[in-house]
Structure formats: C-alpha cells, structure tokens
Amino acid sequence: MICDDDRVTAEGLVAALRAAGHEAESCRHTMDVLRAAAAGSYDLIVVGLDMAGFGRSGAVEALSEIAPNTSLIAIHDRPSEIMRAHTH
Image (cartoon, rainbow, N blue to C red):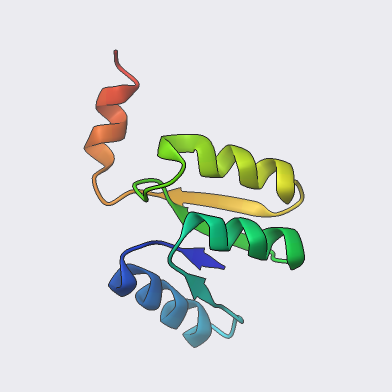
C-alpha cells in the first residue's frame, strides 16, 4: 500500500512495484491508509510524512499500532526539513 497525497509519486511507486511483480495499490489520505491497514493484510506500507492529517510521525505511530507486523517506509519530498527538525 502506497499512501501519498502527491498522485504522481503514489502512481509512480505503484507502477514500479507492479513492474517488479508485486501487487500494489495506493490511497491519498492518511485516514484511508489507517482504515486499509486495519482491514487488510499488507507486507509493506509506504506513507508520505508531509501529508495533512497526522503531522510528521503521527501516521507512522498509528500504523505501527494498527499493523504491528507490517513493514513501514516513510517518505518526504523535502527531507531537509526533517533533518533540520531533528537538529533543534
């Protein structure tokens, strides 16, 4: 499951996973990925950290509780913002 509010990013990641022979789908809202994680069984969830709704790590924390056995990858289109936040 790919969750990112940037349609181009989400579709590109889904296409890459499918081209490699994996099943993949996407959603664009944090609540959608939380519902999907609670209802489904995913090997991997990729979530954008810069989406509205949960702040930086709120979605990752919630997903870790909802789907503790699922691997998570968090992405951000401006990683320098995260690096600055961790230096203060």
